[in-house]
Image (tube, rainbow over the protein chains, first blue to last red):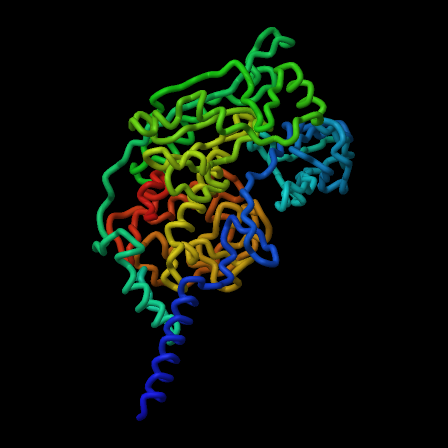
Length: 150
Length: 337
């Protein structure tokens, strides 16, 4: 082998090693790690936030009434939805806390699911909110269940 | 076992290079797994901003707005972390300050108590930008001197919603992302420290979430040099939504089967290998069908305790990383630079 060929082999080998080193150091991979926002360049770091507070006051049960006011509080709220055996009740979150009147069926056990839609907000390059929180328990952890009699 | 050799020529070369540079990039010598690490005590300076409200008979803000007493929250938080770390993490509150006032915002704004209560009741009128002036807090509470003398290891700020705190932030030399950009202006301190930001409107579950995001940031940094299967942290936080068919434990916002943030009460069944982490560093084992029954059916505190319980917590080390991840999370000075 002549000197020129050896020189080319060394250059190619060095380039290969350099390339592998760069690959190892930069290691571009889709890790989807907590703390990263899925931006096109995947470089924005946004602080992760705890969910907004979301509480439902205890309900009255048993009851002979065929309506009941459900009291819900939600941080940065947009809308509240109560789903139960008697129907689906939705209202904007425009008072604090929000009181939603629902109708009830006679002689029925109503199991309430309350959903709170959190408003989406932009803080710099980071987006927060835009999600829905759901609960089937009141602020004390008791089931949101209303039993109606005659 | 924890250290799974990568497959493929590129991974093999990566392993070779990583091993060759291990001495320069990682500080933990390999030690066989086994036994519980010696408990550590971390000294805490507690700073509670809980102003009196003139328009409400000078009652404290938390009473006026029916928010929580910070004391039971602190007890629950410290007890939970001690329990989940198997007695390893012990926080000792060595000083506490209850401040009759509001912390200054970064732009110099300071709420008055009556104005804040009015804004809360209307849910509008909160000051923007919201961020607190960390420099002012660092100076007022002499944080650098306390860190340098060893009197305090970390600081816990406790306040109301819209206080402008990050849930956690790191200062000191070589400080890195800790669910917030590092306090680079504190690089002259003798060592790294964390400032937590808690909210007494919320519960212990949310405090644990603050700590969990701190844990995620620190573990991501601790494993920053690891690639592929050698990055056990990336394996730990896999969940079905992001890694279909490869779920392990997940992270704070995503349980193994979550379909959106905070979806800890999802009843759908997915395959997950979370149970294998109970036998760390032996991570062999088949995936099993799991659902929210395993982590508290949607309860934030129960989910987070479940998650913390699965963090590796034993003596030993491999690949330059300790088998006790709590070590890094509670003391960021143990993370190699």
